[in-house]
Amino acid sequence: MFHRFRSMPATAMAAVLGCALMTTAAAPAAAREKQKKEEAAEGPQASPSKGFLPAVQKMDESLKKQDAAALQAAIAEGQGTATTDDDKYFLGFFTLQLGILNKDQALQEKGLDMALDSGKVQPANAATFNFFSGQFAYQKKDYAKAIQRLEAAKAAGSTESNLPAMLLESYVNGGQTDKGIAFAKAEIDRMMAAGQTPPDWMFVNPINALQKANRTNEAFDLLALRAQAYPDPQVWNQALRLVLGQAGANKQLSLDVFRLMRATDALRNRAEFAEYAQLATEAALPGEAVAVIDAGQKAGVVSATDSQLSEMKKAQAERAGDEESTIGAYAKKPSTLSNPKVAGATGDALFGYGRYAEAIPLYQAAVNAGADKDMWTYRLAAAQAMAGDTAAAKTGFGQVGGAYALAAKFWLAKLNPAPAGAAPAAQPAAAN
Picture 1 (tube, rainbow, N blue to C red):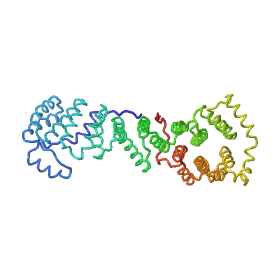
Picture 2: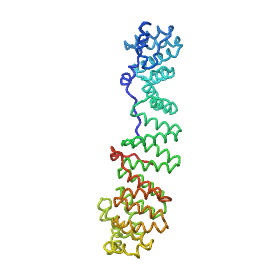
Picture 3: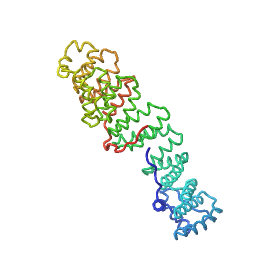
Picture 4: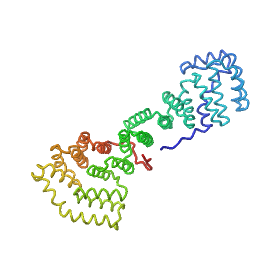
């Protein structure tokens, strides 16, 4: 979950909002008319009613002197004579200023709401007023109000960096999950199309909401986009462990997910290397089992003194024998290519040895046979990807359905370019 946001200090808010102070209240009528004409292009200007004018003048003078007690008294006096929307705008504005002087957040919020509810806030100030009102509501967990104000601030052109995060969390926590997901997806698509990296919370927050709502497919869509935006081994590990969970007892699919973990450097601990090696062993891929254990040892994750994996490595090396040196010639035999089952198994062995280009025609033969088409199409595309034929791999993964469709989605995330400004996430937030 992303961090909570601190409110802007009163002095900074005063600098932002103080520019909205109307000086027309204390000016003669003729001067007010002249100023109205000069500022017509900026939007409607507030003018106090005749009965409210004395109170506005007192408020204005008190504010200029930074006399909080006098300003409070003037506001109290003005409450009985404020009759028009313009009057209510002024009352709200000066209430806001009193809140700033007294560092009273509740009073600041009240003043902002009074000004906004009057309908007289100038267009140039609408984004600022709505943003701070929305921020106050967000901090109080009044998400319905926060959504209303923050949406208005966004529509008015607010560029506050905290706005998207607060609006997204307000949607999700306010029971408007669908709206929050749509907002997050739109922001992610917009930023990635522009070559920008969306902040990590923009993925994590809706992913958590989708998981809680048991909307698994949508959660995986965002997990894949997150891995694309943050091509970091830890991010890949988090996502692919969830994909492994979906594979369940399907050992062939699990083997393929582990292969993608290896391709993304997402194997992070001994248990992952050990399970991968065991699956390769059970699939009669001794060369791949040995290569996986070797990779774990090289990474410092598997100890050289690990008796269980050392024994597995020794046994599989003996089982492999001279397979690696002879399999290339075997793969080219017409009898191998004409038998889809043998062709597929030979392609798997070549893939395990990292001989991806040689595995491609064998996998293609298995695909053409029609049986287990999703699995063989997936493995063909994986071999093409590892061999550097990205275009063919993308086409292949796009044709994969069934149980393999989810893993294919993550291969496509690997093959699609990260935003131009993408950088590894140093501390990626966990998607539970």
